[in-house]
Every structure is written in C-alpha cells, then in structure tokens.
Length: 80
Image 1 (cartoon, one colour):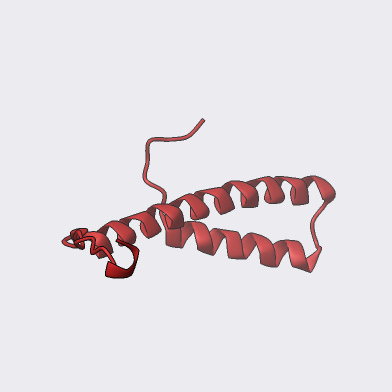
Image 2 (cartoon, rainbow, N blue to C red):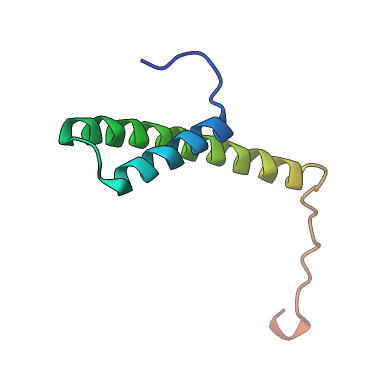
C-alpha cells in the first residue's frame, strides 16, 4: 500500500545505489538478496514515475505561451 507521502527522488536513488552495491558484493544470503531486489524494484518504479512526471512538467513549461498558429492555405495555381 502506497503512502500519501511525496517520494524523495534523491533519497530513493541513493538507496537504490546502495542496494546495488550490496548485491554486487554478494555477501548476503539469498533471502536478503531477494528482499533487496524487491525493494530495488519498488524504488526503480518510484524513480521512473518521478522522472516521467518531471518530463511532463518540462514539456508543459516548454509549450506554455506557444500558440498554434494557423497558416493560410494557399491554392497552387497549377492545380486549381
């Protein structure tokens, strides 16, 4: 169950990096590795969601103030 607390991207990414380092060392039991893997998957999903939301916000800001302008349709005399 998700909490209603905002995800802290930097903390999540730092935790994910630590988990990867621990798993790469291979000094844990299979059970602990599976728990770490599950946590890493959750963190990865939260990071991806946060990045997707940030990307959408950037797109909105980039498009803000830009109005689609209509260009008059000109008939080419050759085809008229």
